[in-house]
Length: 302
Ligand code: HMG
Ligand code: MG
Image 1 (cartoon, helix red, strand yellow):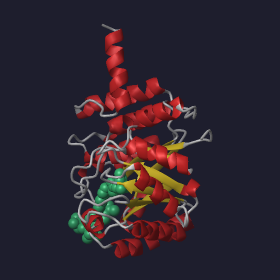
Image 2 (tube, helix red, strand yellow):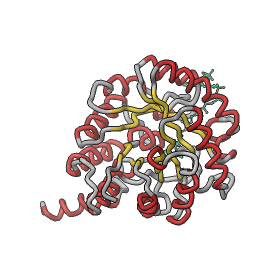
Image 3 (cartoon, helix red, strand yellow):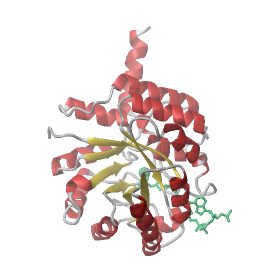
């Protein structure tokens, strides 16, 4: 497992979209700067979605403009052509479209069926390709749905394959409500890798049931090498009741470094970024490593 792993930091988008407190675009810019300063190269910084649906992502245009010249790759979520126009207007070079493997979540999240969502993405992806903009694809509810319960592996494979065939350079498999366990995660990755190269599949595991790191480890053993995570374990989705944050970036970095896989991420700087954003939203980080490091530093200074 010595090869390189790529981390996609989703805290400024997936993390902050579901927090009670609105974090201003200025503060989000500082957060992204701190994450980049800590060594995170790829950061999802916002979304061009309906402000009624996701009020906390308002000002994503400002955030993108504030960070786009930093050294890194900055992603934004786009649900439809209107969103694409917003992303294009600020010069986004990478967008992410998001579909679901389950009908219930698709309806709740983006107000259409899975098939309709794919139809919506087709012109978005075609325009992006014509403009030289890279498109990442998400599939939600890959290991369970808050509305429909169990989700068929074949349903995940079908949507994953469709997004890949439409031209997504990578497909991120979202365990939106964090219900998966390692054997299921492993079987899912293996099934999806029949259609999409393993190196182009990302693991986007929420940690609601405390399984995310175990699932990631199983995925690493299977050959997956892209991990979505959020600083401090921020996050959730407003349309996935009970879903807590993404796996904490600190937890992922600690595990990888402990296994001898270099991440290039400076844990002290990452922790500082997490602590600053945590103070703004008024709650301590849920990442176990961030909590442990904060606690050990308190002891060291007392
Ligand atoms: P709709 O109501 O069906 O859309 O929503 P509509 O086209 O009828 O438009 C309704 C209103 O929204 C109109 O405004 C549009 O202009 C506006 P009004 O006339 O009422 O004033 N509108 C927009 N405004 C800004 N940007 C846009 C846009 N599109 C329409 N792009 C829609 C459909 C998809 C727009 C809506 O449901 C939506 O924005 N949903 C976003 C949901 C979302 O962002 N969820 C969280 C991200 S997904 C996630 O977290 C999962 C993930 O992390 C992976 C995982 O964990 O599984 C990615
Ligand atoms: Mg998510």
